[in-house]
Every structure is written in C-alpha cells, then in structure tokens.
Length: 115
Image (cartoon, rainbow, N blue to C red; front, side, top):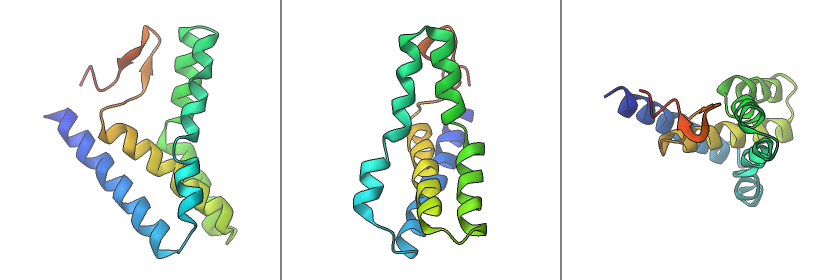
C-alpha cells in the first residue's frame, strides 16, 4: 500500500509540473529533449555501485529540482524555471513508474523495493 501511495504522490507531482509548464507556455520541444537528461548521471555506475548510487540519488531527489524551480521564480528567469519544472517532472515520472532512489547494493535495488 505504501508503494502505491508514493506512486500516486509522484503522479501528482508529474501532473503539476506538466500543468505549470503548459500554463507558462514553455517550449515543448525543450521539455521532451531534457526530460530524460537527469538519467545521464547513471554514468557514475561506470566507476562503481557506490559512486553510481550517490550521483544518481543526488540528481533524483526533489530537493535540488525544487530549489532550481523556486530560483527560477525568484529571479523571474523562464529558462531556469523551465529546467526546474522539467527536472521535477522527470523525478515524478520515474517514481510514478516505481523507479526510486538507489541503494549501493545494485542499480535495481531501490527504495521502492523496500517499501
């Protein structure tokens, strides 16, 4: 049940990001180009599992993406704001599909597996 709650919560985050991105009339080509960009940070797994999990988790926490989004609002900078919304949408999408934060034991060992 907890896993479902987390996935529904993530779906709400994803839908909110899509709504605000659309409301602000940002470029959808940019959205789809950058939507999977945070996954580039899986490159840490080329070093080892610990580095991979650390780098992946830093990029896949809501904290940084929301800070970027808020910074875009404060600075009235549409580029920063759109990047923050895309980044947050990516995290919401991942978690909605059950792709969670990684443990150092392996790429497929996520917090969703332990909920």
